[in-house]
Image (cartoon, rainbow, N blue to C red; front, side, top):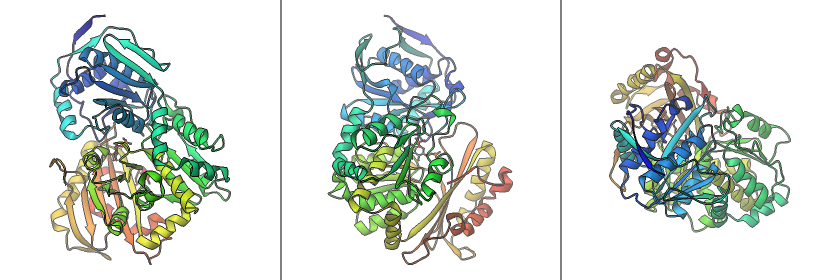
Length: 543
Ligand code: G16
């Protein structure tokens, strides 16, 4: 079939955010919106002729159409092969693994992650490079620049590829390999974890609930937990990926996974509860009567990773995004290993992982992962937790408490103000930014400001500089207030306030979180003037 060159007009707004280009579905459905963006990505890549690309997504509405379009543009661009998940499905960590496993040139991940789906929901496309991780800013900036000047794209006129069964087909000269989305990923997990011990855990009557939130992790969790590890059927709930995630919001936090939380807090709760998000890279961990914050989970996983065979030799270093609590820093200090503080976004971990400087990374936004792929990995975090529980023969609550007794506790909360008018959100940032210079040395009640800045990060591997990555106010006792604008929303702006207070090993670890942080929460309102500047009197979501 002929390849056609089609004229197009540039869109001004194809600027990738924290993790790819996320927009409302209707926005993506505009004529040539997908074509322009995919062509802009391919245009900035060099040496793509005959190369392999991986494609797959979380199954949300518009996934199939976008993948078909992207494959047709890839064929016209001269790629040699596309490896695509059956029915267009791949979790984000599985896509990352397939890129690495097949030494592919890169991949396209079709997802808006934890954002709601369906015709009125969100859609997204993200380009990952050959290490399996999200493209660094040098590439995303080039894509944006290209998207503003694009005048045409090239596409084959072949009919759609049948993605319903595993096998190899041709799309013009390009080979399309439809693969089982789960198989290679499940193999990888077996190299990291003690599957025999996990099987034994479930055989001993250990009870678990995994909420797949009608999103992509369902097939993975079913195959691994119930299929390979013998967990009873029904352990994985909401397992069938649906284009609109069953009308839910596939964000595994205490608001959107409240039913799971309530079940774990009940008197006859299961031993362990977990959930993952739309594209399977986030995780929520709840033990019986014990919620584990993502920041604590990172610290606990790093401190206990050696219990899993894949990490038995120890870890080389830990990285966390700047707003993530400093709990992991104390673990790194004790282990005598490197600790890195990066801007928000998994892409900033890639260089450190590639250079072998860190083994485990994590973010407050419910993401943890390791050097096994270059994305965060929800099910990996769950399996590592299970491996630790099996090896230590203790419950989550006991393990968490022991951790705090050793390292102290970082009380932590995030307050989100969603869908604020962009100008008002920027006014809040500006209000705090202008005070940064004069804050150090000032006292607020029992708190003394030790430092205040607009966070910037100099990548120690490639020397690239990322500026304006969030405002920090750091207190002498290790407490912190961080304020930043989300880079993943699609409507207006979302302001995130991150609040943290450290209490040492002998301190009180049993205070309710919001109460433990009340003084800092009050101070955050004062310093940002958020209520007056936004007209909102409370956060939309507290986690
Ligand atoms: C994405 C990135 C994460 C990042 C998160 C923060 O998560 O992959 O690395 O921590 O965004 O989002 P925001 O900028 O809204 O705070 P995901 O799961 O949406 O891909």
